[in-house]
Picture 1: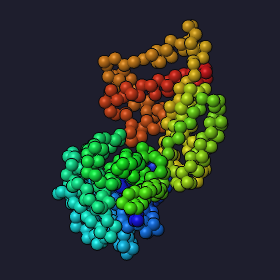
Picture 2: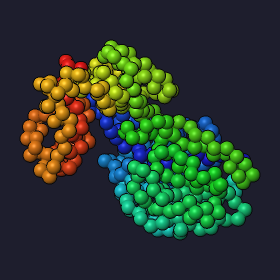
Picture 3: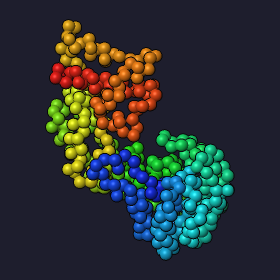
Length: 416
């Protein structure tokens, strides 16, 4: 019997995006998150006394600013060397951009697989053969799996591969291959990397993505870590996920349909924040809050979005270890009041014109020359890094629903 850890996508020293610009954000915790998550991996390997650790690509996040990133890795891996724990690594697309790696001497317990062709390493004491191949460049469009050798009879065979398989949402298609391609090699376990979402693709044979060990932005929410695999009599007897992240991302959605006052909204937001923090093992939490539902508060939220945002930030600030990345307003208004819908209402014609407005062939910037001045009235989030303003007119058209809601909210705030 032996055990090994399967990890991937460490991205040492990768920045965590979406928080550092905010006042009060835990800048040092953010900057050191990937290192501390890697420290957790090392501690876990030592505690479990594993035979070896597999890292399926993207150990680094690209070329280093200096050698400190590599020296940090060498120092931590040296602890595993003293404990007799081997480490096997394939380079992924991010590692391929790290030129300094080639000149950095590594401890003797580390094996980096070649990018020229697949290699196989035998661990006779555990009757294991590990097969792998590194990336030679940032973009690998070839099916690397086809070049892996067939399983060696009488051994537990592991394939170490950085791949998107046939494709996964949010990830570039690199080293594409099918499940059948992997199964054809008759390996017992495929240790995959590149996809940051944890997934057990197959159990016969085992084909596994552990995900990354530390979420780096809001699209990488939830617990992050690696797998501990136990092998008995040549077969996987147990596979357990272990959390390694030190700061967690979460995107709770709050339905405000039944809330009638801003104070009741504040209470609901506080409750959700506290429950979310508790569900994350009380780790520091980076949170994007989405308010949704058809609500009487819709006009007030959109008409006074800046103030509402600061009030919500005040709630998160009062709760230790919660940092608000963004508040997203996905609410809709209730039916317009009878004054608005009345045929002779002074507001009726204007409101219906706004609600039914659609751009024709004329550019949106020509239709709304005051768009620049309107920036200050848009809800929080529109003007952040992913802002659509300043882009092409077809992209600007995506703002129309939000602009309509702001205008209607301003006009009907005291009418509904």
